[in-house]
Image (tube, rainbow, N blue to C red; front, side, top):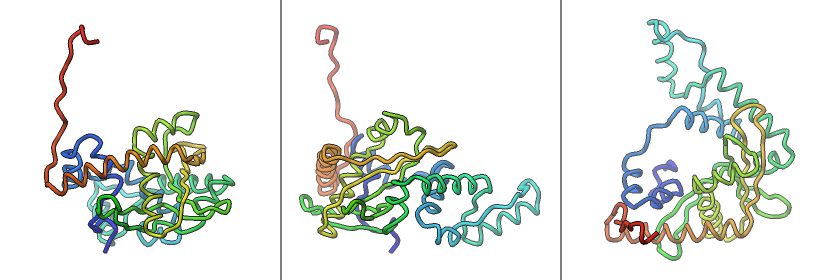
Amino acid sequence: MKYDEIPAVRRSALWEIRKSPAHYKYAVEHPKEPTPALTFGIAAHKYILEPDDFWKEYTELPKLDRRTKAGKESYQKILDSGLAPISTEDLSMIEDMRSAIEAHPTASKLLLSGDHEVPIQWTDPDTGEACKCRPDCITTYGGQEYIIDYKTTASCEDGAFERSCYKYGYKLQAAMYTEGAFNSRLVPYRFAFVAQEKTPPYAVRVYFCDDGFIEEGMEMYRELMDIYHRCRVFDEWPGYEDEELFGDERR
């Protein structure tokens, strides 16, 4: 069974419940079409994490004029092959990104060793709900077991990635993944992000998550899991709660 077909709640979907259960239900029932940025990100992950398998899924797209009949036919043959086309420009960019990671002493040890893209399944002990995650990398660093997540980002300047953590729920991810790995393997894990800028020189920065970061994520995880569990049990997926607006006298 493919990972996407495993009947269990995942972090990316659970994050939608922070808006409302209705948003979660819609996101699950109406998966978004991948954007060009997402498609590029998936290819980058594959090349950087699993370079030996990259060409089993991708093929370099030759220069074609798809306005012509011959160009359209050649492009259709590529699509029919089952391989995903990637442009020469995107491939060159991804190669440079991997080279930047290889040149970073800490990031290369964290991300380019260990086991990659291994699905983890577990039963949440508090709610009994089936959960899943698929860490980018599980490895040993400094004598400790680590889960590593690779993120492309606009900037690794001070404060920039921290804002992304808040915006995209990275604290929830770190907590859910370490909790899932522990429940599945009975081994305590630490968590780190390898972040890389999406523009030259493709600078890399490693962020080690401290206990406070994980604890905040666990509070979020528990809250969202409880909401998900109640909604699933009663099959009720409400939207936003109503709020009372106050006038100037209440400001």
